[in-house]
Length: 388
Image (cartoon, rainbow, N blue to C red; front, top):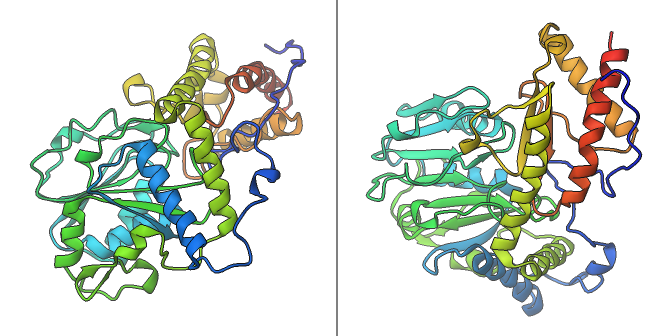
């Protein structure tokens, strides 16, 4: 490997960030020229475009008609926190954590909301906890796809149909890339910046009738900030789910996500998006299967994410390094690839084990991933020659 020749072909787009993700193929700033700018988002046309974002996503994702779908502040993080602060506390809760974001939700529930009857069930990076042991008499909070660990739940079979508690799902890097069993989920959150490659700051929340019932019949013991409030006088604020946002949205970002949704339709809607992500993941999988130094953080293929692909270095040279040096070496590899223009932003998440994280969602081209793979070998060979 030390004598590898620098590859001649680079990806046309070296943007493999796991969020914000690369724009859809063919995107340019010109797609934003008709954005509804310099006007109130509460004007008729502004509300119509916001409502269109909601309805387009509902249709492409196949969200049931009786679910409420709304645009909320603060990206996916804001949407999750809105659900936690508004709904938890009515019954005991369980938070499943197998990566950074799930751990963050667990910390918020235990340390900020201070719920005495909350339990946290954890698993190491690359694995899942025993999902079949979950007690559905409790509210359950979990990520569908662990963006920082490359681990996803395999399906919704483990979620009880007759559950008493709510299934509260952070699905930001799963929707638009995986089939979601909506009838199994009571609260689902995501953002525009992941699979769609949209701009940041805007979150989405989908509520089942059971979630709406909770909101209208339960008042938390703590005060709620305005940006978290979904009810008034014990009734759901229905305008939120018709494009009347809680705070002022970016109409430039609205135009951008409408463009992404139009592109999604042009490639076959949800099936087209899933197909592209699956094909992208296979490019990486085929390379890793033949590699003598790289492996998946999620060793079980059944729970491996096809979007946020997390890789670990399995070479004995790397494994013999101290933990600190492993972190430094992985960052050095990322820097080598970035300086060559082969890959940008592919380092493992800061709390995850040292390694690589490559976004393979639908906005990425398979040809770009194929062009990247030889650079991984070359970059690692260079790392071993130069790392001290």
